[in-house]
Length: 175
Image 1 (cartoon, rainbow, N blue to C red):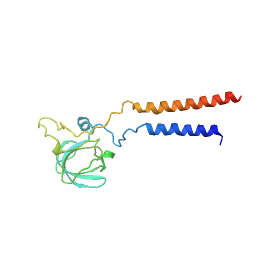
Image 2: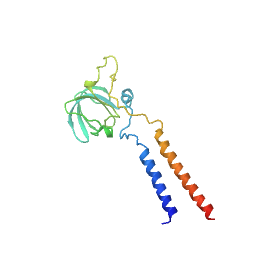
Image 3: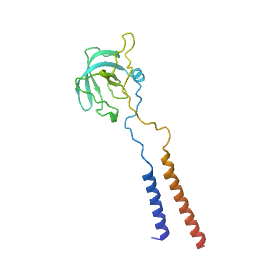
Image 4: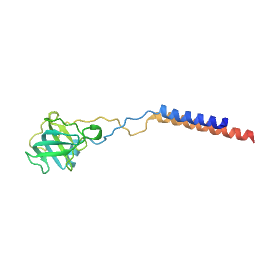
């Protein structure tokens, strides 16, 4: 391998390493959805209160005791698909616990709306059952790029410029 090619390879490897090492990764969120209970209620086909009677890896059974919206009836047992992990927009239901659950196409989860009733204040009878306080996930805002990307980017441009000047200088002096 010629010395010039070796130098070029080392500089390229160094520049790539600097970009990887100096640019921090933003946290990844597998589930990203709006946690606005009012919007979730408006989009839901069905909103019920009930007690979870069974939990599997892919679904829950819910004994309905109050119907706010939809075609369910008090006393019905609904089987709703749900992921067990909140990372995949599911919800970790517990057998015997009471929940307020929104459902679309027999599916529920964080993005559709699921709230433990113990955490929800009771709504006045004259209004629709909309939660006053709901669990919220706090995620960082990613509206602008991290300023750290400018440092490795500048170093990469500097390395590319030095390589270009080095190669042009050698060609000019050799000719």
